[in-house]
Length: 264
Ligand SMILES: C[S@@+](CC[C@H](N)C(=O)[O-])C[C@H]1O[C@@H](n2cnc3c(N)ncnc32)[C@H](O)[C@@H]1O
Image 1 (cartoon, rainbow, N blue to C red):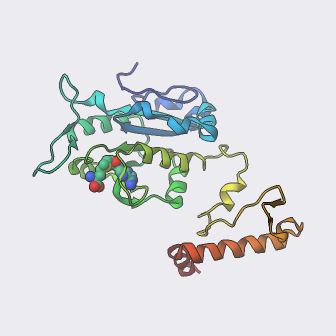
Image 2 (image 1 turned 180 degrees about the vertical axis):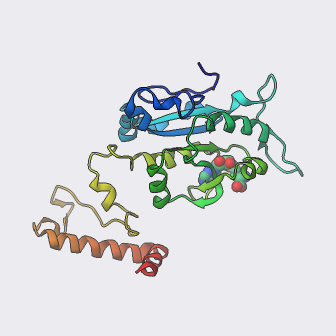
Image 3 (image 1 turned 60 degrees about the vertical axis):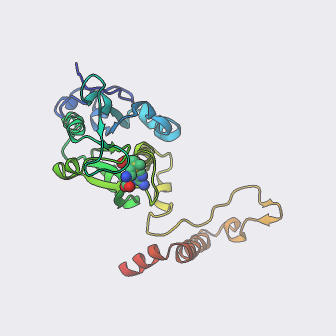
């Protein structure tokens, strides 16, 4: 049915060569499923951690679908070359624009236009909870994993690709970054977490870090749970948690604290 080199994961395979219109037939739940495409030289790295625990269960249940797109199969010549030396000289190799362009065109043919095309890159805007929420609210995402020295700039410019970084350090490739981004998005999809409230209360949900957590036993190595948490006074618990959140945010993340004060 399709010559697209992908192996999709999830309850039912939907080949990336299908047009959005094709996805409109059949199982309603799958039509609504959040779609994740990952263009990568290492398709076997997926689902990886995403196949475990809550994201893995959600994948099996069809709440989202994962389509790794094997960049190698779009390569040039008998050896399926995907990279070449940097123009102007210097160390390493750069992913070729013609190869990446073919992979992008093929992958995007089966994604709704509203699903962003994103290149994981240390030069990108910092990925955060606000971006995760926005991505989770849409139909899905196409992620591009770089390798070597990264992508030819012309591809980034031609497709106006958004660049996202997961932090100020250099990974060997974009695959771990892609899994981090997808994990953060998928856990926000309706029905993925058992207790929906936990995404409301956790760190960053309202611009604050989360308060400290405790559980049984009541005493451990001489340390007790703060008395207010076992008092049964829900108002006092809420106030204590709020104070702790604010204190931690002020102490550890003055940038977040300032951004919050600016909003008030
Ligand atoms: C070795 S890195 C290339 C680094 C690039 N030469 C630079 O200095 O910006 C190879 C690939 O890993 C991915 N990568 C590395 N660090 C990342 C980060 N902090 N966030 C997102 N992706 C990253 C990108 O896809 C990148 O193209």
